[in-house]
Image (cartoon, rainbow over all chains, first blue to last red; front, side, top):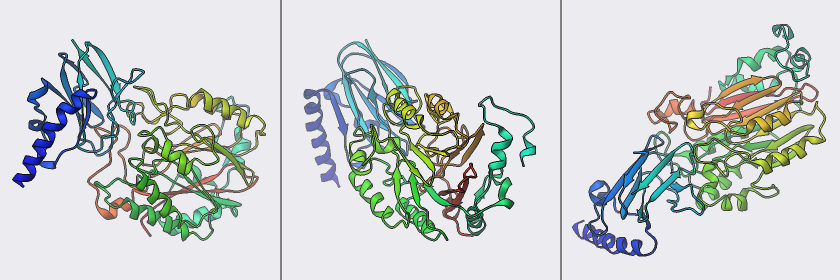
Length: 130
Length: 318
């Protein structure tokens, strides 16, 4: 078990910088024991802002962050959701987030980024980078 | 029966009394109701005593959500199969089965495969589909259209005639706008306008779509923002039956000559509008209770009688 955890951590350490290089978005697939906020603290890439999806709501719905912050969405509902940028072209797209799936995106440029759930469009949120 | 309506509620030019006198229940629907321990709508059931033989029947199933594996139903394949078994046990084979969307939970290839495999065993004349948002959101409907969209137009809208009834399948789960409800879109509305243009007012119309074509509960997105435009195109018809899914429970509304009906899911129930923190699945349901919350809808049509009889059946055997 310990060996598996070590492998997982190493894999994560390898994956994170790679994702930052290729465009700042990543799906996070990890072992169950790595779930939770502790796993989100990524010392190598600056601050982290977590947005929880619960009861068909992004929470908090509006966040204000500094440039370089990594935003992580976690779906705690029993149905799939997405975090989909409303701008064209899309600035980010989580794809399907089933229960407990996570998606991360690093916001580097100042601005206001609106997004919604493409499955349940009543769900909306906003990232303000300044 | 006609005396119950004392004045004309609508300005649609169709005589209310004449229309209501045309209403009749089909006998098979009621036999089914009696045999299956079904929930029926009282508003539809008044003409029961005068029931006649149905000219044809069809069934609606909805929201099979193949791929869903959580409470309250870890066997959505099983409950879909039970629904099909129940259809296969009907005394008269339905000529048509309509699936009103959310065939799958996550639009995965294997989920679509499973749906197709289970529905193969259905003893029905033909099966038609409209997608739910779960079937198309992840790949812009690519897989769905490949497998279930044959012979349809645009994002798979369709129409066909059967025994004098004009069926129209509409898609209101594509191109959803942030903060909005279901959407039909201008292109589809234009198609609908042309589709019904040549039909006589007396042609019975059945519309099927995933999200309700009336606003059930806006806060949860349970409605279609431009449905009013579609319904305006159908207002002149003497009998319009609108069949939807999406909300995993039965709701009915009669407005003028239009009857709106939502079907149960074959997978899991959802809460009544506004009666929970979110529209997510109702989780704390015992197995035997679950069977009373899932089911199918059977519709009977008697030629020349105008209105169609709608009966809902649960998976619970009497």
